[in-house]
Length: 168
Image (cartoon, rainbow, N blue to C red; front, side):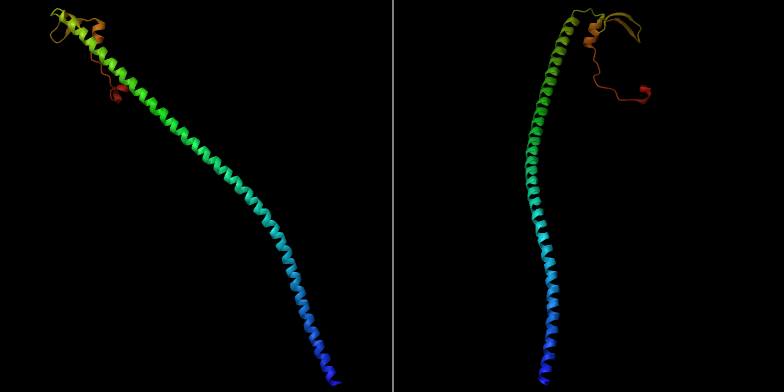
C-alpha cells in the first residue's frame, strides 16, 4: 500500500498541475481568441481605410492635373496680357511722337508765316503785339490782333509749383 499511495499523491499532484496549466492555456487561448477577433476587425478597418486612401489619392492626382492645367492657362493669359500691354504702350508712344512731330511742324509753319508777315509791318508795329498806340516810357500800349498774339506768344506748358498763399 505505501507505494501506491505515493503514486496516487503524485498523480493527484500532476493532475492539479496539469489542470492549472490547462486553465492557464484556456485563459491564454480565450485572450488570443479575443485578440484574433480584434485583429480581424482591425484588418477590415485597414482594408476600408486602404480603399479610401486609394480613392483620395486618385482624387488628389486629378486635382493636381487640373491645377497644372489652370496654371498653364494663367501663364498663357499673363503672357498675352503682357504682349497686349506692350503693344498698347508702343502704339501710345508712336501716337505721342507723331503728335509732337505734327505740333513742331505747325509751330515751324506758324513761325515762318509770322516772320514773313513781320517783314511787311511798319517800324512802328511790333511783330507780335501789332501797332503801338502810345508810349508812356515805362509802359507801351499796342493794338494787338488776338491771332498774332496767340500764335507768337510763348506759353508756359508746365504746371507751376503749388504755393499755399496762391491756393487759398
